[in-house]
Amino acid sequence: MTTFHTEIASKTAPKRPLAVLLFGAPGSGKGTTGKMLAKLTGWPHLATGDLLREQIARKTPLGLEMQSILAAGQLAPDELVSRMVWDRLSWPDCENGFLLDGFPRTIPQAEGLARWFEGKAFRPVMIHLWVEYNEILRRLTGRRTCPLCGAIYHIESNPSGVCEIDGAELRTRDDDTEQVVLARLQTYQSQTWPVAETLKGRGIAVEAIECGEMDPEGVADRIVSRLERVAGKFEKRNSKEISGAR
Ligand code: ADP
Image (spheres, rainbow, N blue to C red):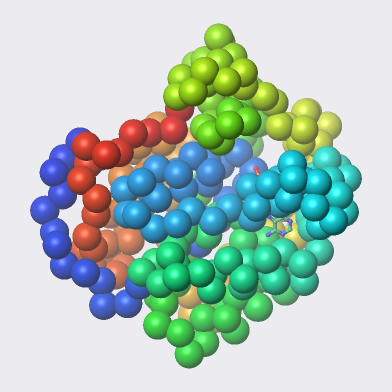
């Protein structure tokens, strides 16, 4: 089995660059896994939640508009998020493959993305991360993030409340309070869940991964195997460069 601690053998480039769509409920591990996969593959990890929070932190007009929407656990308007994504996907660092986390999250976003792929070389693969409901609640209400580097922790595994990478004091995301978590899970159920079927209907491969019991390294490892099964072996970075999210 390939692991993060194994020297990677294959040097065969994929025939078409992979566009990996990380899909799953809030707290399913898209962010943590996406960061690990980005280190492993060298592809950019584009998380729409991070892009929106960045706008909020910078107090841009878009950020000011989005602040109350995110704080209530609702979704940002499709047109606005989609425009942000199309713009980011046009950067040259996406040419060899990318990891899209948190998009598409509604049927109109999914249809827009399917259209975006038309006529492009990318091979899209949706990775659907499955985690049991109570585990999701435990993860989200105990989640702490580093305001400087974005590392993700859980209060149980890091009771010190300090980032192991840069020593910054960890924060609870505004939308990780119990009330907002429940609203986000409802939004997921009603608006995001049907997206997997929409993409399947558009011929996009959907790979489901059961990951409630697995640590993030195990999840990332399994995703790599699935991607290679779908698209063939691809060149990875030296495993020594790879460190996991906490
Ligand atoms: P999670 O997956 O844990 O909910 P994210 O960081 O992906 O966390 O998203 C945080 C919030 O950002 C969402 O609750 C939503 O308000 C907004 N958001 C992120 N991605 C999208 C999207 N594709 N469409 C609309 N809103 C989004």
